[in-house]
Image (cartoon, rainbow, N blue to C red; front, side, top):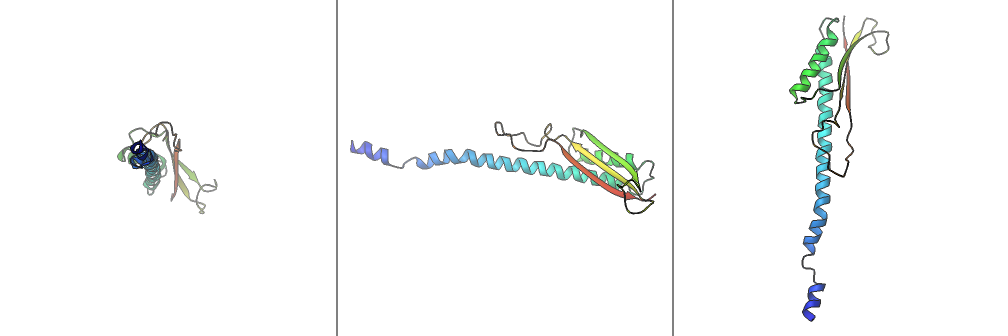
Length: 148
């Protein structure tokens, strides 16, 4: 009887129980951190694609500047492994006086806007049952002034 009481009062196996309780919480935190990091990386790539697309329009005749910018942005995305096309990659040419272009009266600007449906094509899937807060759409806009 005394031996049974000692066994019930002993702490043998408590480390295993604590480990079993802590490991799932730790793994969820690690997975959440990695998932958030991947979403931030996607935002960086999409922003860089918009910037590269807008910069590609510099020195191009203004009639084809928007098309060149759009094609360059799509090329950067495909080079980075975004095989699924964004919902929209648009490039627009605006002229001075519209309020969206530079300070010069003769300035023309190319604005590249990219919208990527991240929730439909995440880098890592959400952890089942936890619904991590990730963006549904990643948007990036970049504007450069091109001289006529």
